[in-house]
Length: 548
Image 1: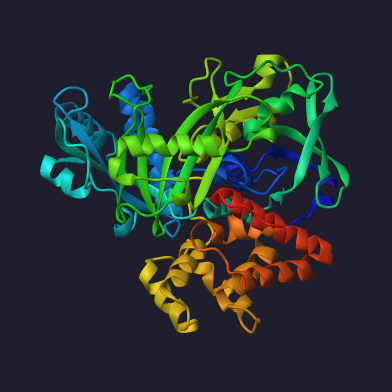
Image 2: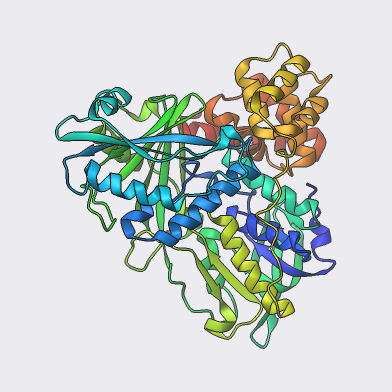
């Protein structure tokens, strides 16, 4: 992946994608795989906003049975299979358990019937998957088994437990980055830190955008026959600033969403807990369902949603909101006993909400030519990481129809993402990596294979003969030369993921800052500013105070 901002202004693209969250990344990938000339830009880093802030689940849509939405269940199952097949190094099956109470809608009879339907809807979900990536059927467990799996569970009225399996992303940032990387491999142009400040065009036709390179300060125009607005929380803001008249979306509001990484509770499976907050499902269950999921020796708990007012640029997660969420978790699962000091990282972002401030449940694909009489523009408000590929397929179908008169054949559900080709099982690659770096500990080897799959060999090659830990050095140089890391925060938060579960020590962080300074020609002042920025962000997520 190479960053060539100047080249963006030299040609007219078929499709320009604004916003490189998971939906924008998948749109660019799909369009490039079909042979379109594609450009992808984002005002920040790839996946640096809402897509970074997730519970890291690829779920088959069991919860949609509560809304009798069988079509979405089937779509979710199919897309879960895509991620497990296309990125087996990044996505794995994960067991889920929830306690059941009484014999009504929250009990085993109702849930057992739902699971039978669910198992029917997920028929064929393992086709083409490696054995260790296949999804077992959902089933019930006894009251005693539930108590054993969930020590300290509220036993009043406990009647049974429900078990099912879904997918878990071991690294959501790298899954998104793999989509961007594959788009570039087949011809797309991509650049982070390119902010769009308006559309260009006339006579109610969008012909591209005005933009600024936030790294160099250079202003440019990017021309395209079709522009796809996947700017996430900034979609409405971008449309409102346009000279073209585009009516408000069905999702004009936003929710704050939050997931917290804490000490580990359940190492090998996820547990559902029911809070005192009202659920919005058709089938009443007494409260909102949260999950405590295992992740790299920690737990991630989420997701909470609360209404948000104001500009997305002003969003900041607050300690009182974190403390309120912790209190809710403690009330739902008494053994948790969490406080602010237990929070090792706060994933927080903004997701679409309806005019009534309910959580948006369905993606909106807005054809502005049909709705507003403005041609050359499509807006996409996505709500779910799992089905981003399917949404992208539909968006590119629409764009292709407008550009060529036919939708063409998509290829985005075939093949594997970069790093996955040749991946058979983790153990074989781990043994190969251990032979190259015998001094590395198990956690570093595991993270290396998880993050890069078969590309780990190139990472270790780059890290050889450096005056730093070979894996740290290799990951840093690989991020600089192959993954478009241009800020120190890009490296430590989204390329190496080390701030989340095993922070770089001061020496390794300083080495990475010096390596980036040399590669990107930073001044000493810029290097120090980048270091301070990362230190402040890490401290903010952990609830600490930085002394400058």
